[in-house]
Image 1 (cartoon, rainbow, N blue to C red):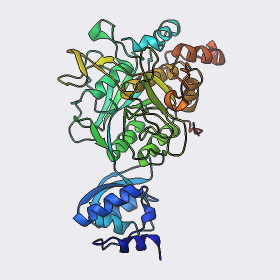
Image 2: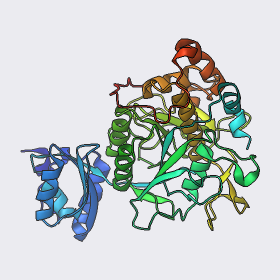
Image 3: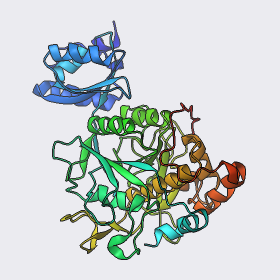
Length: 427
């Protein structure tokens, strides 16, 4: 007798037969069974060979279709838990994933990593670069960001505004021009522009399904870099095979440099969340101005025993743009707030990646990842705490520039092409 049928007969009150092998995590199957007893609705992400056909089939059965993805072969729906169990018997359906809750990973930092040296010596402040901020939205009217927000989309139903402040703080660290502070608080790539996919509501929370939709939209806008200062705490760590991890890896394969927060669940081991556990992306831990690792910074290894994070960057007491009328962090003044977290470390990576891409347009996401890791300052800590160490922008440029040669630099190029497909090795 198939495992699913045997399991169904053991659960009193559950009438539907199901295939337990179709559920990615046993803990999620247990949640579905509990909700089936209550006849409750549940959101779920379903991998399928033909997502459009699967969406139509489930819709005909009464499911509410939330998203049909193109970036991964999956569909997000809401349906009764009993129907989820029944659907697991469908041969056209590959795997069920929990639509997990995703949340934010809550002046001196930019010079500390060496960005001003690149501004001065390379005459490079990220001009022509576009960075996707997948977060709580961005306040495009902030003085440091005015004229920089070139596209926005909302996946929360609230509207485009940033009612939390997290996304605006992230955007300011990446590309803020410092106008509100007389250049005291300037982003890493102050001439870059941003696009905003609002996937987290004003309370700082969202879902896997909304985040994946935001990633898909952002990737279609052809950004050079994408920043995700968010994550889900996965019980027992994660292995990078969940839908959100698959989506960010697909974006990397399309040529987007993706920087993701490791999470704030440290200092215990195996605490890196999703999608930070994805194999190909650049996963960021947090350090302070003295190059100590922040106690809250999530540590590896991943469930499949890979080292994470990949690198660390400043993420303690970071002052950056404050969205209008928001209370996130410790308010400094009308235009600035101070916050800590791997969320704050990650946009430093995105800004650095924008500087590198502006200087070397043909560089691939994998090459950017390797460059940052190979030139990082070793803090002489366990790799699952520091990765390869703290990013050193000056050293990264010093290593890359001789290889490229002055005649291959393409300064002033407004939009570097990034269509080449790149197969990334697991690190």
